[in-house]
Length: 296
Figure 1 (cartoon, rainbow, N blue to C red):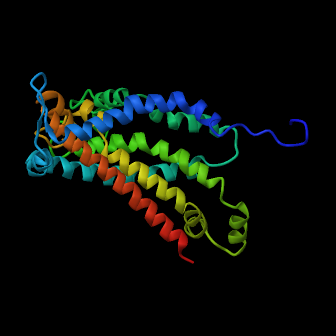
Figure 2 (tube, rainbow, N blue to C red; figure 1 turned 60 degrees about the horizontal axis):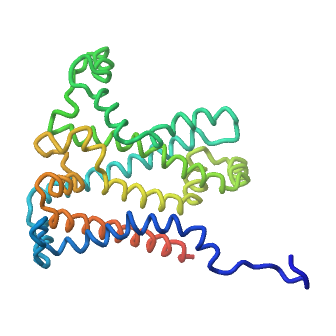
Figure 3 (cartoon, rainbow, N blue to C red; figure 1 turned 90 degrees about the horizontal axis):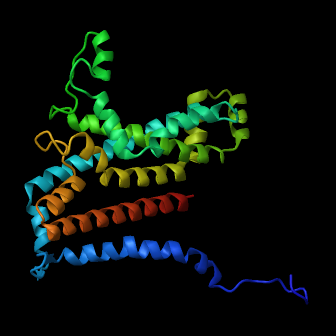
C-alpha cells in the first residue's frame, strides 16, 4: 500500500501482458488458420497454379454430395447417441462416486483415465477388444455365454454402434467430473428434510438433485454435442469410415477430401459449415438456459 493510504492498482494492460503469450499462440495456430480456411472455401484451390474464385460452388458441392449426406446422417446419430449415453453414464458414475470419503479418490482417478489417455490409444485398445475372432477379448467373454463371435467393426449394421460405445466410454468420465462439481453445490439439508418427509431415493433425485443440476446439464449437453459432431479420431482409428462407408462421419469426409483427393476448397467449405453448426448449437443451448432461468 503506497503512502497516503491509497490502494495500489496495476494498469489495465498488465493482465493482458500475462495472457499475451497464450493469445499469440491461439492467433497464430488457431484463429488465422480458421480464417484462412473460411477464405479457401470460396476458391478452387490449385497449388502452384493459383486459386480460382468459385463463390458458393464449394458449398453447393457439399450439399449435393450423396456421401456427405450419408456422413451427416451418421454424424447426427453418433452425436445424439453419444451425447445421451455419455451424459447418463457420467451422471450415474457421479452419483456412485460422490461423497467425502478419501477412498473414493482412487476410484475417481481410475474412472477418469480414459479422458487423459490419447484418443488414438483408446481407439487402438478398443480395436483389439473388438477383434472379430473368438480370440478377441469381448468375443472370448461372450463365448462363455455361448454367443459369438461377433464382427463388431466389420459389419455395416454394428460398426456405427460399436464406435458410439467407445465415444460413450470416453465421454462419460469427463461428464462425471462436471456433475461431481455440480453436486457440491446442492444443499445437503434438503436431502435430510426430504427424508424426514418420507421421500424415497428416486423422489429426492427427481425433485432436489436434477433441478439443482439444470445449469450443469445444459453445459454437459452442449459440450457432449459439440464433441459428437466433431468426432474423428475414434472413427479414423477404429474403422476409417468403413465398412462400405457405414461409419463415415463429417470429419472423416473432410479429411478424405482435403488430404486424399486434394479438394481443399470443398473440404474447407465443409469445415466452415461444421463450425457454423457448433456455434449455432452453443448459442441455442445458452438461449434455452437463460430462458429457463428467467421463468419464475
